Image (cartoon, rainbow, N blue to C red; front, side, top):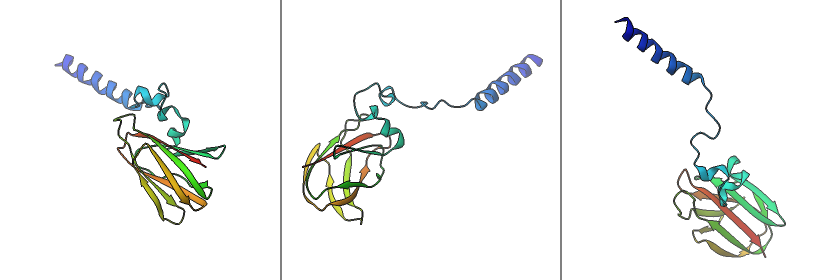
Length: 142
C-alpha cells in the first residue's frame, strides 16, 4: 500500500510542478506563425493583431481572426486593395472597409479589388474569419 501512496504522491507533485511552470510565449502556435513562412504571419504586426503600418502611402494591415483594425488615413480617389488568404485554411477572409463614421465603403472577398471614388479620410477594416486565420490586407492609393 505504501508503494501506491508513494506513486500517487509523486504524480501529485509532478502535476503541481507542471502547473507552476510558465507557459512559453509561442505555445500553441503553428510553425507558420513563427515567421518562418513568407506570408502574412511573418509580419511582426500579426502579434499585435491587427497591426497597421503605412509606408510610402501604402497601408498594410495584418491580423489574426475576426477583428477590427485601428484607424488609418486614405487619400480621396482610387485605391487597390489586396487580400491574402488565411494560411490555416487557404480561404479568403471577408474584409469590410469602413469610414471612421461607420459607413461601409465595401465588403471585399476577392484577392484584389479596385476601390473607386473613395472620400479622403480615416478608415478601418473589419475581418470576419476563423479565429486562427492570419490575414493581410494591403491598400495602395493611386
